Amino acid sequence: MPNFYHPYSDAFLADPWPVFRRMRDEAPAYFVEDLNTWALSRFEDVWQAGQDKKHYTANHGTTLDALVGGWTTPAAFVFMDPPEHTLYRGLVAPLYQKGSVDALEQKLRAVTRKLLAPALQAGELEIYQLATAVGLHTIADFIGVDYADLAHARRLLDIFFRREPGIQGTTPQGNQALGELQAFIMQLVHGFRVKAPAKNTHADAWLNAMINGKQMTDEQIFFTMFSLTVTGSDTLALACAGTIFNLSQHPEQFAAVRADHSLVPHAFAETVRYDQPTNILGRRVVQDLELHGETLRAGQNVVWLFASANRDEREFPDADQYQISRRPRRNLSFGTGLHACLGIHLARLEGKIILEELLAAIPEYEVQTPRCTRVYGEFLQGYNHVPITFRPQ
Ligand code: HEM
Image (cartoon, rainbow, N blue to C red):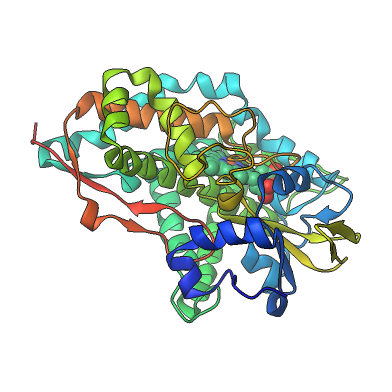
């Protein structure tokens, strides 16, 4: 049994790429014994698994922490199988359809410009923070809560997801923050029940839903808000910060984007391939299956290493190179199958607008590379601090 990968190992987290390569080449179905968890690292395997409804369930969670940590499975659609998944996802899905999202363009540009304005005078801006704020504004409007309230929830979520070397998964402070978050969101949910939420918001849909003859409980609404806040603001921010960072490392490609803003979506797409924010997601096996000579047994966990799959040279030529000229045939950056990203159109539009507005307002700037930092831990990955400096305007 190979023994060179562990998702919580400090050495692996410090530099995952050579380990991913070895897994793809030597052990594409890798068993992590103490976690009773398989890890799939090749593009084709993750692609097929995402569409396989027979062998996998999302009912026990889709994050590593939930799968191995014995969480009581939260009652949100991200952690459900059909038919419930379809019904609960359907309550919020209309706002994420391409047509609805495209209609937000002017509003999103106005929000981005407003958030950019103070930084323009200061001569310094942090990209992750800017993109987080834009993402939170949209999700707050979609849910039907105040931005300040969702920003507070996001601060608590950040503590919950912060990892410390030597501690596997959530820290004691993280668990405390989760308690506070739950109490805080429950108050917001109570508020929805006292004063009817605005029409065409998620809160309105949740309160009026009747699924299998039942209304949604406060706990269900809490977990759904929790997942939309994370998915709607963190991945986007990592993708935007990563795009600015990676372009700064490739000056010719940066010059091309600066000269032709129609390349912005390609730079964003290449960043989410090259440095996939949703590093690890997974499922529980419900029926034994054979893969690469191994048997994945019912009851075991499987993680899909999206970040590795997107660097698989079997799918992408020169996979370890950042090339915005790529036009890949298939794409795993936003997942595949039933749980494929709900926010794909929103993420692409927000990413495009944030990066375009930034380039228009600040054509010349310097990325402060030594001050850039990456997320630490097994959950999401990428740049979470990318400051730039420029001549104040
Ligand atoms: C660049 C940014 C983003 C990336 C790379 C990304 C990636 C992904 C991936 C890989 C999945 C598949 C999860 C799985 O199979 O378990 C997913 C699911 C999801 N994403 Fe995104 N996402 C992004 C932005 C967003 C945004 C802005 C939202 C807005 C709310 C969002 C909401 C969701 C939701 C709700 C799911 C779960 C869908 C389900 O379980 O049915 N994502 N995303």
